Image (tube, rainbow, N blue to C red):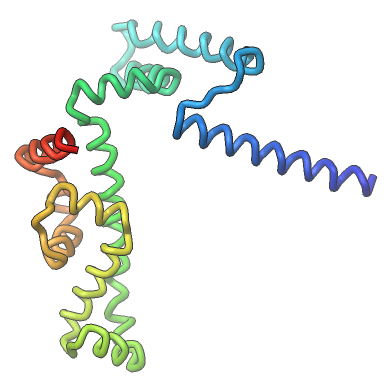
Length: 200
C-alpha cells in the first residue's frame, strides 16, 4: 500500500501536467488531440452545440437565455467569436480589455488609501522623500501611484494604447477617477487605435 500511494500521486501529477500543456497549446496555437482520442469529447461537444443552437433560435426564450446560448456557441466555436469581433472592429476584445483595466484600476485605488499609513512611518517616509526628492506627501503619494501603474503591465499597456499622449501624472489621474469614466476611450481614440493596428 505504501508503494502504491507515491505511484498514484506521480500519475496524478503527470496527468495534471499533460492537461495544463494541452490547455496551453489549445489556447495559444489551437492544438487539438488526435481524432480518435478526442472522439468522446466531440460527441459531447456536438450535443452541447445542438442544444445551444436550438436555444439561440428560440425567440420565446428571454434575452438572458439566448445570451447564455450564444456564450456556449462561442465556447464551442472560438473562431466564430473571432469573426464577429473582427466584424465589429474588435469591440468585443476592446470591452474585455476595458473591464479588466477597470478592475485593475479599482484595485490600485484601494491601495492608495494605505499611502497615508505608509507615510506615517518615519523610516518609510524618509525613504520615499529621498527616492522622489520631495517632502510633499501629496507628491509622494502621486509618485507611488504612478509607480504602481507602471508595474501593472496590463493596465499600463491599456492606458498607453488608448491615451498615448498622457503623462504619468495623467495616467494616475485617470486611475483615480475611474469611477467617473470607467476608462472608456472616445471614438477618436478607438479610430486611432484601428489605424495603428493597420500600420502594424
